[in-house]
Length: 237
Length: 327
Image (cartoon, rainbow over all chains, first blue to last red):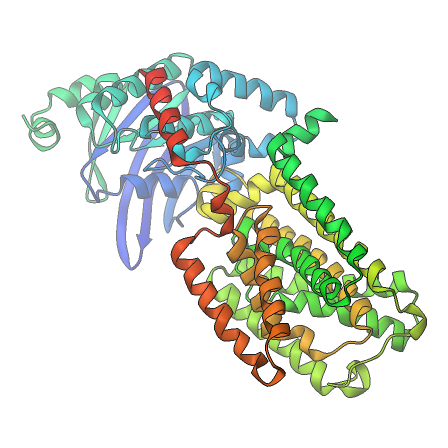
């Protein structure tokens, strides 16, 4: 069943036509990857879906309802969670406070918040151990864990993760991809934006290739990995 | 109860705080009028500092004319008592109401604009009120001001204790807000409003709320100042007061509950220098504390609070341990 779909999306930013009619969809429980070079419009796509950029034309459908150009807060409340690029945290807040920021739209239900916090702590035990520490004192990998945890705190139906591997050591990236795979195995739908095409496509159910604001290719993860064009352009083979 | 105290203040801090309080309580016993006056003003600046700290240090909305809220509190009391014949409580509430109106305007601007634009709009509103207080003689008393009824004259000792209670209450209030979910959201919208918005936080509402809370705190300090001066004067809106409020927090440490408490050392120094100099040289005290500020900015850019912060050595060890835990 289709959970989220983007139909003919166009986005203009600063006078430039960044996204030029993009179509893609994510089915329930699927792990979809969008790969592409710098400046292809991957991050803009995700920001537009979460309501941070205005969408000039086209539609974003989520659970058979249109969410195009709704306010970012409402979209988050509907169950679309975004993990932004570059480990964006609130550096002055503690790890726990950062996680709780994700649970905004159901903050009144303290019991549910506590339950969700335990779930996140089970996934990343290191965060429970240092929950009172200021976020900026964590290492890069741990900061990325906090952002993923914070995304999970909103009890989303779909998680959009922007550049999971940006600026992290290979061993950390590997363990984070493992976490994403496990998360997907529990039934969470995931839309992953990646430059690290090889690792991302390996775990993906389906993938899209984005170039200069348009989707140029789509297929299962394996299909794309074996495609000659993808090989030469993104895998360096 | 013990748990609550430990949540807000560590034991070491609590002991320091008790010592400080003990000194503060014995100041009136010295029977030195000059010292007492300085102490009253300094304590008032703690309240004002916390108010500014909440809006600018915690929520990141830079209020350049905080004296606007302070002055409205003063004018509310004098105007209510002198012109409208309100009771003391009524006139304090009048000051509060005037501040709510001002905070609503500023807050509305704050939700639409941010950064420099917010500051510019703030200056506009402040200038309007400042000019109004000078020009509309029949309502505001112009530069002569409105005097308060004589029977409301309080002894300096009483004023001192009111100022002390207000300063402590504002510090506790600040820390209470900071530790609550409200404070988490305030800090979040300071550090990354876009991200807070994407997570579902209602940043407009929080900006609005932060302005209103801060204005109310400053209003109480302003009302207190009316009882201290027994009159009003357009100078309560002056840029010098705004600047002092900002300096108190920046010297002490922005975004920290004890920042204003350490920062009043700046106010005390200013008052002492003025007292020591021959009267015709008093304006030159500005030069001395100007130098002190420059040295402060170079040596302790994070404010005096950084003296009490943990040494970076501890952090290094903790980071290493956490790396082991991840591996």
